[in-house]
Length: 261
Image 1: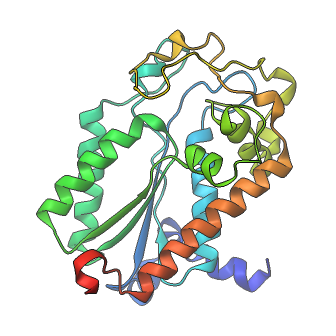
Image 2 (image 1 turned 90 degrees about the horizontal axis):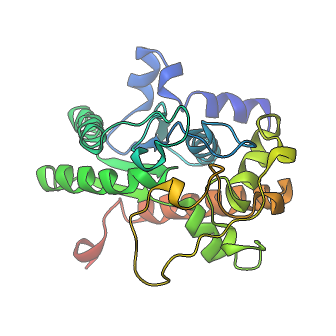
C-alpha cells in the first residue's frame, strides 16, 4: 500500500476527520460502515477484543479500495450474556444494543446518509442488529441497511478446503485465531491455545446454549490448527465479498428487488 493510498484511507474514518473534511466528503451517496463487536474471553490464547479488532481491520481494507465509504468507530461491547460465566465478560442487555443501533441509524438518517453496511463480529449481536434494522427500515423505507452477520460462518462456506476442523468454526477457533494471527500476531499466544473441542449439538435444530455448557476454556473449535496463511486468505475473501457487494449496489444506485424492474 502506497503512502498516498494510506492517506486516502486515513480520511475514511470519521473520528479522524474535522468538520470541513466531513462537509467535503460525505454526501447522500455515502456508504456508512458500522462495526459491532464484544469484549469477552476467547480462550487463554486470544485477546478479549477479538470481535471488534478483526472486523474493524476488514472495514479499513474495504474503505481503502471502495469509493465514498465512511467508517464509524467500532462498538466494542455486545450482547454476551451467554458468556457471563467467564471472567471479565463485559455484556450489555439486548434492548440496550437495539436502542443503541436504532439511535446510530437514526443519526445517519438525520444526516441524509441512507446507505449502511454493518460488519458484525459477535454472534450475540445478530438478533439485536436484525431487530434494529427492521425497526428503522420500517420507519425509513428509503434506507438500505445491509449486514455481514457472521463472517466466521461465511468463510467456511466459501472456502470449504481452507479449514481442517468444523469448517473453521469455534469461538477463538481455527478461523478466528487465524484471522487475528494475520493482523495482530502480537496479541495471539498460540502456545496457550487449548485442545480441539467441537461441541456435540443437533445438526438442524438450534439450541440456545450458555457457553460454559460447551467448553471450560472460553474457546471452541481447533485453534491449534490456526495459522497466519489461513488468516490472510480469510481477510482476502471477506474483502472481496464486501467490495463486490458495494460495487454491485453502487451500479444499481443502491436499489434492489422490484425497484430494478
